[in-house]
Every structure is written in C-alpha cells, then in structure tokens.
Length: 441
Image (cartoon, rainbow, N blue to C red; front, side, top):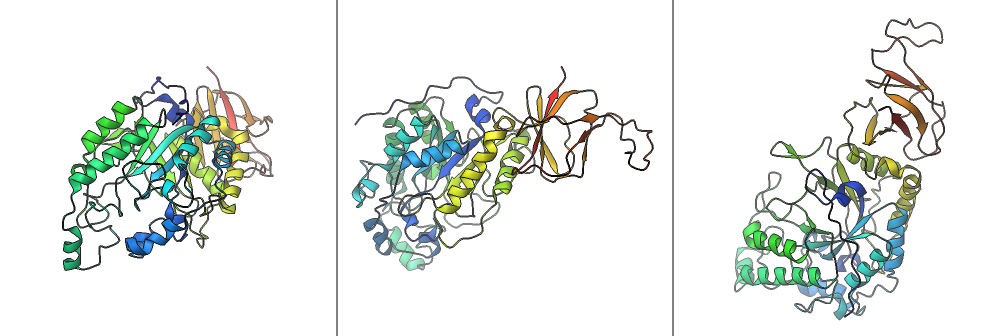
C-alpha cells in the first residue's frame, strides 16, 4: 500500500507547549460519518432506539455511498477557511472506515468496498489541510465490550445483561482498541491530531451505571502509544487523564478555559443543528452569522472551533452544510486575519462586541450594530489608523474630553481614555462587521 507523503512537520510550539499551528489556525472541520448516515436519525440512533446488532446489520449491508467525493469535501473545507480536519475513523457503533486487519466490521467489507480514511487523508492533504482522526473508545459492536449505561442493550433487564456480559473481557477489548489505534497511526503518514471519545466513569452532570474510564481504556498506555507513534501529535482530554487541550462540546465558553485555575488551550466542537451525524429531519439550523460569532467569540477567549459536517448516506454534504460552509467562507475570505494567528486582547471590548488581537492589530467584531458611534475604553492615543476589514475603507475616530457638554447634534464627553469611532448608519452587508485598528507602538 502506498503511503501518501505527510504534511510538513511542525516543531514550533506556542506558550502552552502545544504545536503552534493549532492556536494559529483556529478553525477546523469535524466529519462524523458512518452507518448511522443511512437511518439519518442522529449518530446515536443505535443507542436511542435500543437497536440490536442483528437489526443494525441492514445499514452495513446497504452502505454504498456512490456520491462520495473526498476532493469535494476537502475543497469545501479549504474554501470555508478551515485549516485542519478530523474524521471519525470509528464511532460508537464500532464500524471502521478503514481496512482494519482486526475486524470484519469495516467499510471495505460493505458494498462500497473502499478505504474511506485513505481517501480522506489523500484529498485533504492535497488541499494543504492538516489531518486529524476521531476514534471512539466505545464500541457497541465488539463482542468483548461490556454492557453499561450507554450501551444500546442497557434496558434488556438484569438477567439478560448478565447473560450478554458472560465471557466478555475488557482486557481483550483494550488490546483491540490499542491495535486499531496502532494501525491508524502507522499506515497514514503524519497525523496531527487525535480526538478520543469518550470517558464516562465520573461525570458531574450524569450518573451512568457501569461507566468506563482510564482503566478500561488503558489510557496511560494508550497516550504513550499515541505519542510514540506520532511525535508532536495533539491529543484531546477524553481519555480520563489530562490531554493537550480541553474540548467543550455543543456550548460556547464565556471565558478562557482553565484546569486547576490555570488557562489551557481549548477547542469548542460544534454542529450545524445539534446532531453530529446526518439527521435528515432536524431543522434546528444555526445561521451563518451565529456560526461566525461563535468562531470569533472563541478566538477572543483563546479557543478554536471544530465545526462538524455529517455527510449523507450517499456521501455528500447536504444543502444545509454546503450553504453554511459557503457563507462562512465568504466571511473568512475578507476577515480571516482577525482569526488566524489572533487571540484574546487585554483591552476591554464594549457591550455587543468582542476583540481579537494579532500583534499590533486589534479587531473589533460588531455583533450588534450601533447608531453612528462606538466608544472604545482605554484606546485614546493608542490607535494610528482604523478601517473596516472587509473593504479597507477608512473610519474616522476622535477623543471627546470628559467635560464636553452634549448640545444639539454634539456628543457629550466620554470617560478619560475613550476613543470614539464614527460608523456609517447602514451596516455593512457581511455576517459580522469587523473594524481593524492599527495600534501605535
């Protein structure tokens, strides 16, 4: 098997010790794809509907995504401004998207018959996008994975569950888990990111019986294996031991994230509609401007966003995903320098706005549109020039002394140190308007 040349190694690190590309690039694509695309009722359909392996088999037998075109996926990711991509190599259903030697439950044994991971890696590398793998620690199909509170068979009753668990051996499952990870980290060149999912031994939000964690996965050994096979790889925090970053899911952190009082790198993983896999009838779709606000708000709090697409059972991005990606890409085309290489600012942004900063450039993201003026605390005397980022059109600014009286059309004084920007009455026709402020030395 020919191995595609890996992406160029990244040896530089940021202040946290993380490979510098991650906090520079800020925006990635998550792809959840598996057999669950066929029922099209959420990626947890097997769990939610308590489907047995026998009844789930029809999706394996009919998996034939004839419209799968990873070059199209990769092009859309690049045009949306995404710099890295993470594919579900195996989700909780246990179906492997690559030609694993350790199972028959894999894409190459379906009517489709192709190594999806191989084609994903080749296509996304060709677009200059870094490669990440998602890998489920959970496996509802494996005969040694014991029944617990998140398993589809959890409600079968005590006697039936005891019978199902008879002879199951998590030690054998750990060997399988580590073996599959070894395949993925050995056979596909440089892998930049591994997103493990997930541990549920100790959960402050939900009490799950039979919950599994680091001992079940052999997490210490698995982390060591991952780092040995792929030096420089980034690993998330879901092994029930500390990882390189934390991964809030389906919510927007309102401040930089911390572990034991210390700020840590983080990445919010988000969806278009609340589902990760293709969910045909789910219309709870986020608008482009909301997605852009989520991205830039995250950067303002020193975080990344990993935005998910769930391809259809035929292998395409659906119209909702295509429209959203195109809309984000249109905004990123004009505004990406407020995202790439940017992070939080020590300046305090006015209400309804957030700042990101990159060196001597400060970016004011206007989530609400004010009438003619916006007042920026502590920036008086610190700005050399101001312009809209989307078209580089100049914006005027001034300082209004605190003792100035408001009179007729004249603004009253502002607190000392305040810079007042003058804006047009009509809001620019972009998802989120951004003002670029050139700071003085």
